[in-house]
Image (cartoon, rainbow, N blue to C red):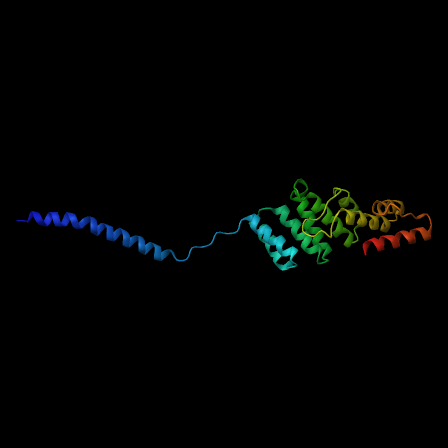
Length: 208
């Protein structure tokens, strides 16, 4: 006959056994998890890293981060614009133009970077000697614009671009008018060879 005392001992032992099994199982699971994978950077963090690279002169990092956004399929217009500027400051005018055009096709002109993309396209087009494209893009840049990531590029520089573009296209009066936006006291008779030479010299001085 079974001793009743043994049932009580078993009943008291079962919870303890279960606790050991449960705790042991939890410990085993924790050990199997290994190191926790850090969360991926957000799109904004990747963009911030890209512009930080650009501003610091680390253009390889800037390009890689902008391309990472493209690979994610997010912030496409912003990434294309960033690549445009990255190529522009490396004097890769044709590649820069392609990226700015892609940025605008992706809707950059509806975003806060609209002026930035149009200005970038104007600079790249001037460098590629596509002067009418330069003028078309420059006309869409708002007065007072300053490039947030390199203040050497601003609306005055865009106006100066148009002075050079008009001159290259033979529209000396329009070129003079652009120069006079920057230097109201300057004048030249652009109907003469001497006047056109003086205008060209003033454009070069303003570019220096």
